[in-house]
Length: 140
Image 1 (cartoon, rainbow, N blue to C red):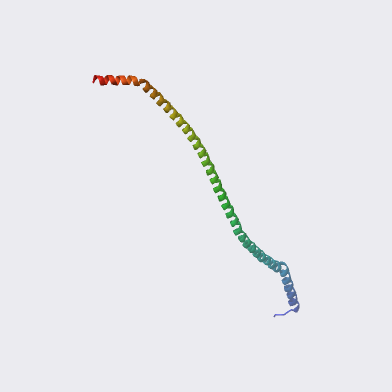
Image 2 (image 1 turned 135 degrees about the horizontal axis):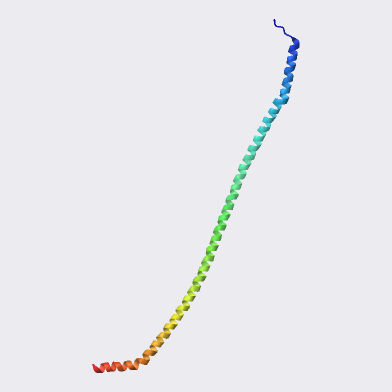
């Protein structure tokens, strides 16, 4: 019936060991090395990501500082522009006021001249007016 052949057993055992050795060399060790490398890469990238997250906070602070500086510069530029505009308005206003004062002085001079002319005319016609009044009073 069944015979156990020691030669077949030894050959099978040697083939089994040879297959274990070959599978270990060609399949298991490269697979284990790949998995170890992958774990190492993942842990390294996790550390780098954590470092980048820390750097992000610093970069955000720098960006906020730059934004604040830009806002400050914009406010300063706005104030300077407003000051320049006010100075121009004051200059234009004082110039216009000077022109108006000159026109007013000319108007007052013209008015004084007309007043003198009217006074002179009234004084020259005063004797005629007196005679006309005497005539009216004498008739009444």
